[in-house]
Length: 439
Ligand SMILES: *Cc1c(COP(=O)(O)O)cnc(C)c1O
Image (cartoon, rainbow, N blue to C red; front, top):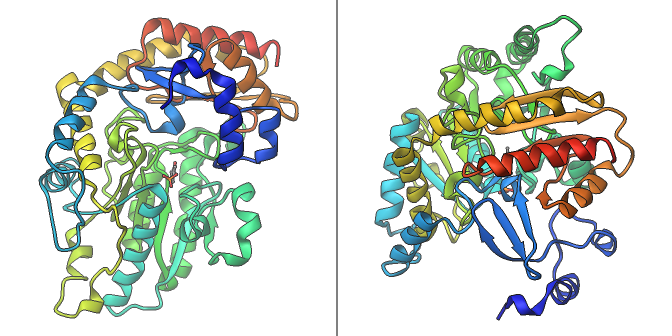
């Protein structure tokens, strides 16, 4: 049993021997050991030696209401006494039905299919879109289009529509080709060109592509408003409105990957709301359980559902994961939706966001900072002349000051849990300002 008395170094040694950490060159752990975490408490992570670190990136963007949230804990304790899991082929249960109904009410998409993590949601959406066209007699529509620098997960299908060279190049021979169109990321705008004008220019290039290739294209997949893994690239909502129009005009599905941006991250419950659009497929994960349990969901329309509804088994969507619709995970998700409703989270986040933006003003004005940007509960900036190894060095020095943060290349970003308070926001701003002068 883990006891705090065991101390950090013992866990570090054992971890290095027994584990293969994700997205990590294991040899680098000789220099930068992982952080051994004994406990979590609100926005804080606490190691085995009792040191505290502010979780400024919500444990890889999943945590919304802090670690060991008493209300989510209570819901899970109650669920543990009723049902932990039952297979969802041939069975159903209360939490998965209630969650599907509530998500339908919130999104206007009335059919929910569940997976266990983000990448599985991407796979589900791609396969459903492909099979829809096949079922309706348009089997040539097999292609997928995504944005430059887009990220949709790392299983083979998801990686095929991801455009991050570091994750993708090694596996290129295993992947199915997909097409990338210009990203609306406003950092790429010409001098004097507004974010909106740039987004419209990017939208025109998507329109051009679809005008030519719609006959062989099943769907466009994109991350609405913020391309997370690209380094928190942000763009104007007009792009989404225009992409929706192009998809409608050319009969191509729009898949909104809100795995990272859903559940309030961009200021609205779902990012698509800011463009007033409904996608054909909405992929959700990460924040869906408040960072408690792996769960993902693909929501879709009556029209898509109807194309699979038939006497013939093979026209159905014959896809499954063992833990599909796990009862504990669904119950955590229901507790998250309760929190949004009962605490008016979106309104209180607005006040917090305004305050953190104010505290970060000296950071935004720092001579090394470029493209300071902010959407909802996400902040990011690029560091001019970031030296090689900047990201690791910034991470290490921040940790020594009690801040857990992991820059993406030369981009520093914050994605704090919504329970962040004034003192914690001050710590983030102060440590970051100090580090900009030293790293
Ligand atoms: C994290 C992420 C995924 C993949 O989710 P996993 O749970 O890591 O498989 C897919 N799309 C986006 C936009 C993400 O941020």
